[in-house]
Image 1: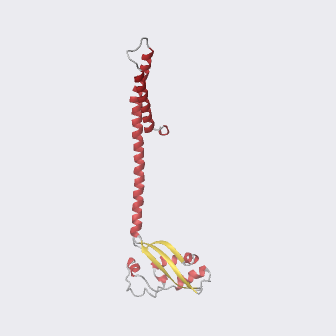
Image 2: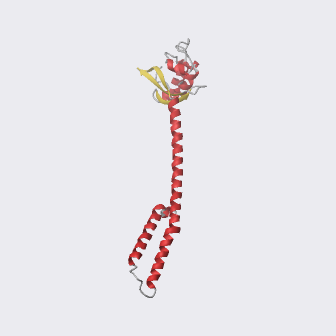
Image 3: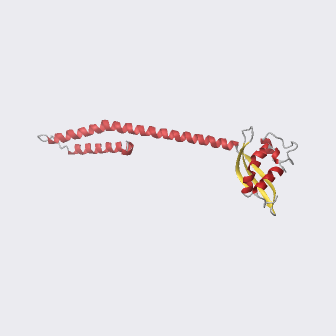
Amino acid sequence: MPVSLPPTEQAERIRQGAVIAECNAAFLAAQGLSVDKPGIVGSPLREHPTFSDLYLGRIAQWVASGYQLSGIEHRLPDSPVLLLASLSGVVEDGQLVRFWGVAQDVTSLRDAERTVQHQATQLRRLAGELMKSDERVRRKIAAELHDGPAQGLVAAQIELSLAGREGGRPGRDLAPLRRALESATTGVRALMSDLAPAGLS
């Protein structure tokens, strides 16, 4: 067939005139057919539903793409089998002399991909739940630190400050105790900030 013909005419000629020159046994077996079945080789391509759906249904796109088409996913009729096919043509002296299709059974591969995608979705959901749970625990600990030890330390600092202002000198120097309380208070506040940063409150 001359490749100089308009693409629509080329596609129609192929639909009407293409015949099966050879057929892979594995491809036939995937359809439940035997390679020995009479009438497959030499018969018109359009008479076979699988070939027609898989290849002839895309013939115009194939002609327009320069007789090379790949990445065709096709599920066989009444079958769980999923094929990944390509269609290639040979042009010699301005004539399309032959073309062939190659199909690979990718059913197991696609099933595995779906399983991986499902597991990845579950993993993202669990990670999100873990982050929320972690954040709740952090907030709870920070709140308990604030309501418990932090309040107690502040109260102790106030009492210490008042004791230093009252009449009479205390029996011992309170400066080391004051420094220890200030350091403990600073440490608890830093821990509360680490557990529940201001942006999360």
